[in-house]
Image 1 (cartoon, rainbow, N blue to C red):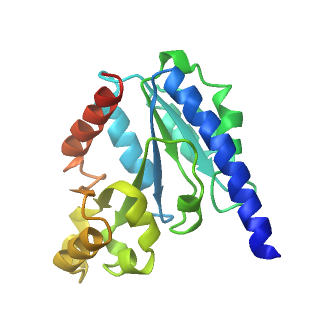
Image 2: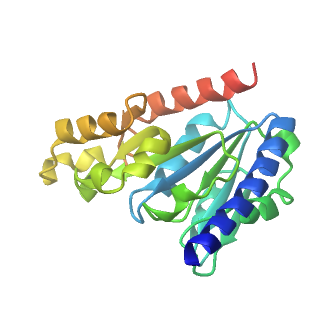
Length: 218
């Protein structure tokens, strides 16, 4: 019985996600869904990405959190439209939540919509939001075992951002093993090694993202 209920929820979500996707396509938006653990550095990566892209791409952001608008206030300081979604306890965004937020963003003036999902390695990847691609952010301080423990996130992501590389000397992480495990799960995935704190590696990530936006819009 519980399985049937869960399937019903996912089926409903998929219908709304398809409507979101249609709306994104009509407005020429490229949409990414950023996922990762709490503390992986998703918001800092996003802030630095905005600073690099803001003069090249018209951006908007949807921020997902269980409670508070702290992350949205951080993004707002970078001069881009941002809408906060508080899930009130749910460990992920769903397509209906995103649909409700879209009415408060003028999509006609956006090239790239970035959705930062709730911090979680499991739930968010199960729910299609209508995005073009999923992006995983993994802090190297979380350890090199995470891809094999949470394979769906890495299998579904078009790119993996390995963040906090400036701290590598303070960890015992096996980077060769980490990269190898990610590639075994998803051979075609792009891997970017970055430090959101120092900015190192983010230019390469931003160039890749700009290319994706332009490929969609011809």
